[in-house]
Amino acid sequence: QVQLVESGGGLVQPGGSLRLSCAASGRMLSMNVMAWYRQAPGKERELVATITSGGGTNYADSVKGRFTISRDNAKTTVFLHMNSLKPEDTAVYYCYLGWGSVTNWGQGTQVTVSS
Image 1 (cartoon, helix red, strand yellow):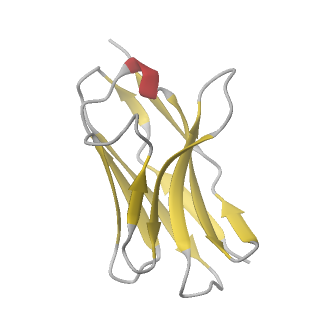
Image 2 (cartoon, one colour):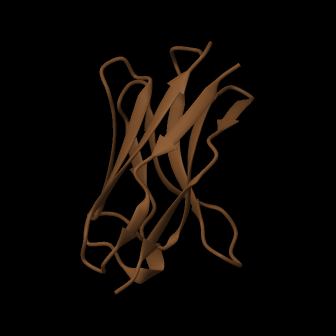
Image 3 (cartoon, rainbow, N blue to C red):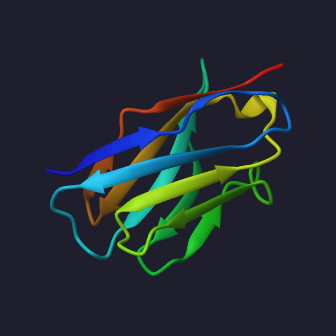
């Protein structure tokens, strides 16, 4: 069983920065994908960024150039560095870890961008 524990959300002013963290524990395949998704009120959950165990990354167009996803050397913690935050980035951010048909989700952390 895999557990994902997120941290780092909060309230920030437009133009500000936040860093989200997600620590994975339990049995997992070494070759996997970690990602961040987000869900705003009344909207569907959407992909924000992904990173493979090999370090390959992918970003939603809406966050390119502003957000950076990274993993620690042990590859069990994923980070999302968010810069130049906008009110439209307000959402619950969810951590994802998966391989093959296996999917694991964190409990979510709220990010609110408001003045």
